[in-house]
Amino acid sequence: MKIFNTLSGRKEEFVPLDKNGVKMYVCGVTVYDVCHFGHALSYISFDVIRRYLEYRGYNVKYVQNFTDIDDKIINRSNERGIPWRDLVEKYISEFFADMDALNIKRATIYPRATEEIPMIIEVIKVLIEKKHAYVSTDGSVYFSVRSFPDYGKLTHQTAAEMRVTETLQAEKKEDSLDFALWKAAKPGEPFWPSPWGEGRPGWHIECTAMSIHHLGRQLDIHGGGQDLMFPHHENEIAQSECYTGLQPFVRIWMHNGFLQLGADKMSKSLGNLVTIKQALERNSADAIRLFIVSSYYRMPLRYSLEALDAAEAGIERMKQALKAEGKPGGTVVEPEQFKTRFIEAMDDDFNTPQAVAALFDLVREINRGNERGMDVGKARDMLKELTAVIGFTLQEKKAVSGELVAKIEELVEKRNGYRKAREWKLADEVRNQLKEMGIAIEDTPRGTTWKLTR
Ligand SMILES: [Zn+2]
Image 1 (tube, rainbow, N blue to C red):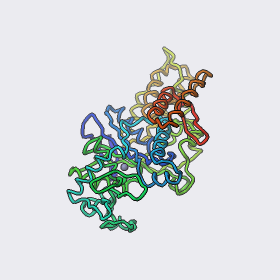
Image 2 (image 1 turned 90 degrees about the vertical axis):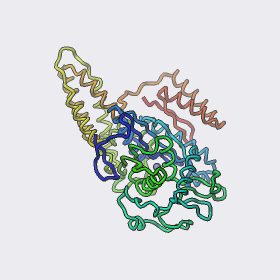
Image 3 (image 1 turned 45 degrees about the horizontal axis):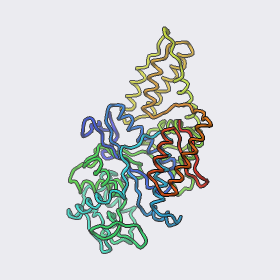
Image 4 (image 1 turned 90 degrees about the horizontal axis):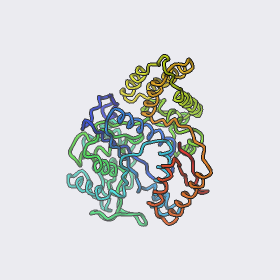
């Protein structure tokens, strides 16, 4: 299996550190707002990659963090006049509702920055001891970029090139490229005690501490969007390799392409974001996934309603093929060649457009064979196996009985009671109970709504 490594700039044969296990880390969200289509693109891409690795027999330990303390969270909490912890809990539960609705497999572990403060402090201490970091006069700690000559190796830039985009900030650091590991508390901000005074962790150090804590000192795969390559991932490499003394921190760096609306990258500054909830109101999770995997994960994806609708029609054809009935004694559609094509495509840096093309050729064979009264049973089973690897559910929506509606509404009420009492764990348990029943809930300004996910 070959995977494109951003670090080397080429496709490399994939050999995990441990022959059966894959240690995989993907940067998670900063929980201050709902997720949008760009998150769906990134997390569906890495979900497919993870599912395929599992299909090939690897035991994948997949860690994805929550950044649950950050300037954006503090600002949003002040704007809305709600405690930052409540804001964080709200958007973590919204995140899970969105990801579940998109049929994204849950990570093995979801560490939160605020629960990892001891490890973060431990890493910073060692970096200071090794002279890779320094304490500034206000009690903040900065990483000294000039102490790590390899800085810039991921994005293939020299310090001079990186300085071009760097603006000098009014921070007490020695060099404009240096970045904060620990931020001294400002009045009114949340803080934790540390050897350098009260403060909170910087963003980059969280990922180093959480990935090393949960996966060990070297990872097989580290993923994220291309927008995280610089400075975030360069900083992660600098911190981690200086802390452990081991190289490389990550064997394979993987980055998904940008989402584009028209010619522009989809971003908050454009004010034309599509949230995952809005996308799911219009299209099924399967269609959204098909739209995403029809494009190569490293390439930019142009958001297009026409393409989403075409994907919806494609999903219907797949469902129809899965309903095709086997007729004993007829001619068999031979499915192995489609599986071979599928695996060849996926083994070549997860080339999902080609893998999906093989699936649709199989769909056509099944539907054609079925019309001619052939036995398509084997081919249909193969289609079921391979579509599951991509993560399609291909399930028909079920009708809901009045009895079930009453039961669901009772549970939603119960959960709202817990939420009011700030019993978040109990509220989460009810949400999980609903999820097991195939019900996704959504908290809106007008109250909690629910819908069937299968
Ligand atoms: Zn990260």
